[in-house]
Length: 350
Ligand code: NAD
Ligand code: DAU
Image 1 (cartoon, rainbow, N blue to C red):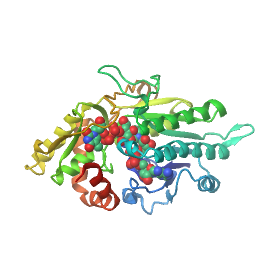
Image 2: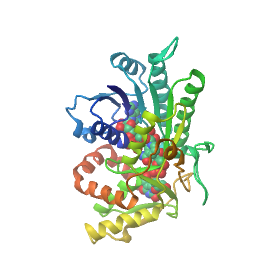
Image 3: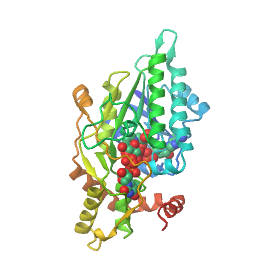
Image 4: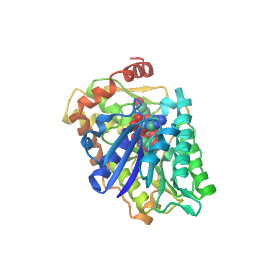
């Protein structure tokens, strides 16, 4: 019976991971530590409500006393750190909280895990700290080439810089104390429970409400999209079988320009839901400051070492995703009411 401390497990990827793991394994316990910021939502976890293998704790990864208590109370084998401030646009407006949560929160988790797991004779058997990182730490690509695990880190935004800072702290705990760690660096995820400030859910939500679809700059920036469940599968494989001290890139070679994504969402909604939704909704707006041009992941190492491959193609995943939002309109309504309404109005002046 393995015990996982999953942080940020009420957010987009974290909640998908918790649901994925508890469906796949009946012999694990997940302690889910989440602060429930605007991005965390207990509704994402309603499928596991009442499941004795899931224990939710509301709290901050920066809180040393709380995290220490969790290590004392539970015999934790794995830490999986999803908790973060994750939105690039917010990081440009308010960088401090990104340094606080993403860098200092990670250091606190590493330190509490070290205190609990380190013995005079070495490290407790079988434990591991896993950091959920991002391809954005590598910076931006030109028209050719891919991010490899050996690509030097060159982050640009406050968000990606804070994630790179966290990765370096994880590396420091491995290099200095020999702590058993792994890191995954994944490309852009999409799927259920994605907060509608990020491109794909924002487009779906705005189409359904006949609102403008804001496209930054020329719309030709490229992202490499991966269905969220394939990311969860990769993290599970790395925690179980990934080599200690290693970084694994995760991505499915699904590069698209932003404008291609916008047109794909419009076309599906136009053809299947509401034929008044057309490309007239597209509105080119001022570019994101320091906007990375292209991301593209080389996932060769995780494929060769662990046999990971993405199961959901973009064509299938995007339909599943749009359909999920159509079936869960109340979820969108709930997460976008309250503070988010003011944020949105401020961002887009409407
Ligand atoms: P998200 O913003 O949807 O969720 C973040 C979660 O962390 C929320 O539930 C929030 O309440 C929680 N949280 C924030 N600050 C906290 C704190 N101080 N203590 C405890 N909990 C806190 O983010 P996401 O998109 O699910 O991303 C999860 C992780 O995956 C992040 O580390 C992100 O950098 C990484 N990542 C995301 C993507 C992507 O495409 N979304 C891709 C690669 C890596
Ligand atoms: O690559 C992984 C990263 O992907 C994760 O580490 C981040 O946590 C996650 O938020 C995501 O970052 P991006 O900045 O790539 O995602 P976002 O959805 O914000 O934007 C995707 C692209 O779409 C980007 O080029 C900016 C553009 N965009 C975004 C929004 C919100 C628009 O053109 N219009 C928009 O309204």
